[in-house]
Image (cartoon, rainbow, N blue to C red; front, side, top):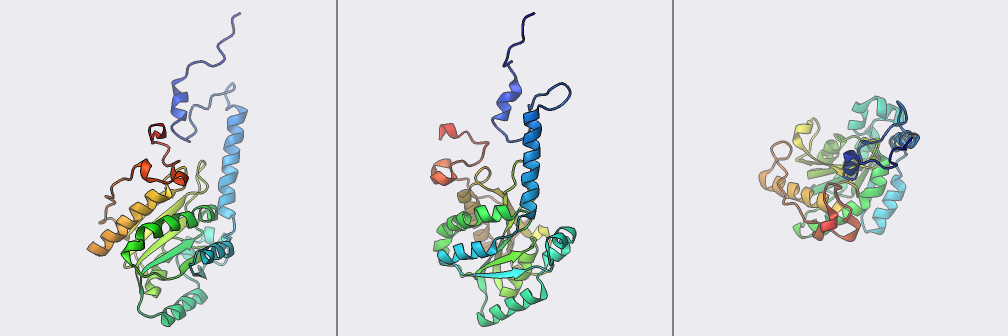
Length: 274
């Protein structure tokens, strides 16, 4: 009896080259092949680890200081990781002690600032550890000509997106940019999200924020994310608004404008032609 070909033609295999999604995994009887099942379990473990990984704020603060940036550590009203995960509302506001610390800082530096940069662990401290510094480097390179004043980088333990509004309001900031670890997926445990708000204040909804997501080498590159964020910031200052009424119409940079570290870019782009 003739054996079937070892590698039969399968049009799905070509699609696997274009996406990290789990397609065309094959089968063994009525189940997944062992390799695909083990890969799924490994990805799930990575996602769980990313959610529970402690925020290394001390290491990040040291790295910022080495680059000439001061930082200030704050904490949300969620006292630990369990309360953070079970009570999302507590992650959206500062603890009383942190709010007082920020008020004292604002009193010592009156007049407000143009931009507050907030970094929070969110649901993936891994994303913050990996991508905060290289992204901020690209952002500061592109915004150096604008002359905006900024506060020390605010580091927040157990923080969610809305906490940036309270921080911006207490600092008297015209704009706030929140860098936060996004909810891990089974192919992206280290995705960094950027949330931008003009005229931040407590009580704003997501409709007043602009989001740039999936910032990482396998997703949206640092240079592209910085380019889009800077467009939103400039337009927000011109139109004095952000959110659903401010569309991201930034011209897309070409791959040639990216540095070698960013050349991985978006997996949908054919880099063989670059």
